[in-house]
Image (cartoon, rainbow, N blue to C red; front, side, top):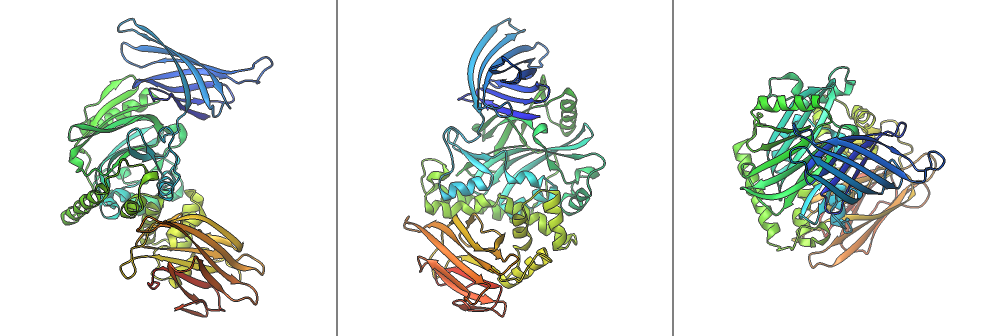
Length: 583
């Protein structure tokens, strides 16, 4: 089964269909002007039999109302059946309430979810995209990508419990639990203030009701326990749903009675929207939401769960509509002093951002000074944040570093480089960080003519640092074990590790980082480094050569010294902004 997700230019006609390559059967939703029609039908592929020169399909269904409106649609596809690049669609609707018959012709293209014509083309915009978000220029909002890495994390109570302290997120959280089709489900709603932005979210998660893999129990104990809820299975770890279980969702977020933005109907696992430069309390916000379900049984389970919580739910066919204002579920405990501190900090960062007087929130157009003010707010919701929470929770539960690799890589599907960064990121010094890498790799090292690099991007003698964005890298010998980060925020320290491979080569390479200084002038600096397996000495340099100070150490002399030790391995290099010193 593959998914078709296409829409017309103004988003008033949206198509979400699943098609079966083997049988040609199709089912899903066509939405027009906010009304969803659950449809079924089939398609025929060009060239599949002699004489078939076009790929076509036809579907039909209704809006599910007691007095339904019926829809019939047929179309001609351009591109492969698994991913058509264009559909010329003809639609007819017939209304049983008033007897009207309407016809439409539309050209649909793949739903990009990035607003017309927008793509990240600056370092900061790429940081936003890498963190899992895109920009909608029509509504001037940021929203989550369907392929965001956050999907691999699933969700559990610990992420909500740490939102205030870890993300400066002042939120209402509304988990809705129900059982359906031999699975335990959670649809969670959020609204509130996320640092520099006001926003809302709907996430869809589930887990097997019985026979769950062993790693679920580990994650239940580490991050799932929900002390505020007496129902045992609510304190569980849930996976994000797969493509075949995503739901058609839409919501409008209103602030103090006025619409702030709308997330149009989209099949998603995590539908979100965020408006930079707006300061709100959760009580200022109401989410007006609609969700369409694939079956009446799933809809009934959700409606029952919501009504038991006190919600008034409107039903039309397989679609429900409701308002999320005051949360009904017990909220994670929040220390009043910390809440006041976070609210003051959020108000201050919004005021600081708004003081730049920007015409819009397009990350491509955000000037360097504003980037340095809010970059940490954006990266706070990136995968690294959730990875660090997960790793620390598992460590507190008594799991060793080498165990975490198996769980996070083999079971949850994260890349080894990302897991290595989360597992080792909390070490206080580069020397102890290297030791934690040894523990993580344990038997994967060779002769260890490796190079560990630290970039200290913190204020030095009153000179503020800038956001550093990776623009290129190259390896002459060895391979990345911990890759250079895509960005290094002002006020932070980043580390990466180039390990030697089997043989007699060592570890040598370079990375390029771009930044914009306080005067608005762009720069690119190249950090070159190497621990050769030969008579050649260790080395490290920067080109051009004055923005950072360089310190070195090695296995035989690990203490930081200005310059680079000619011998000893592994090599340790620190590039420090201005005239500062390494950790």
